[in-house]
Length: 222
Ligand code: ADE
Image (tube, rainbow, N blue to C red):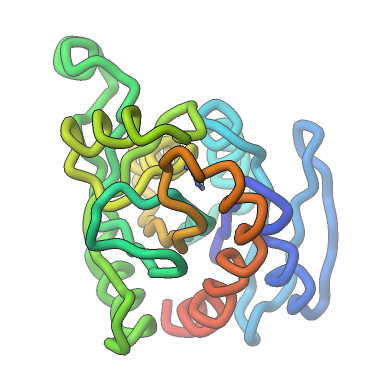
């Protein structure tokens, strides 16, 4: 069984549509779909937006479905000038951009960086191919929709992450504590700048759908 966790309906609805032998169950108020994606047993959960929802549903998914691997997919706002609209970002490492270094260093269980599983990462890179627009690197997670150039620059300066979103590191954190291999894969919907809200509204569905092919192929390789 492979677990797939997305925050929003737009990020998982096409994957759910592709499921065969589809079944639905509710846990903590949200729907979990099981079935076969490209012939592979998966469970797909729409965890909701933000770190608490992501961590909570990652734990539920791990406890109830015992996945051998977790894929966290969705859209993101670019932080780096090298990362453009609809580019793919495969997160080799995940950090929180809204937790103080002092807290991370002095309290447990917290890590400064959560690393995606190397084997999963390499499989994701292989599936993504080398046609351009694919980046491998750091993703920064926090509980805010970043929609100002000032905030974007501040996060980029502090984290040097390629993009920002609101769940990846919380999933990574939970998976790490449970010793479940994970990888985070995101497609860029906006530039996390003053235009972000408009771009997000316009491009979230297209950006989400950019990942469907890749995830469908990836599950077959895990
Ligand atoms: N997900 C997609 N775009 C985002 C942004 N600008 N900030 C946070 N999460 C996002």
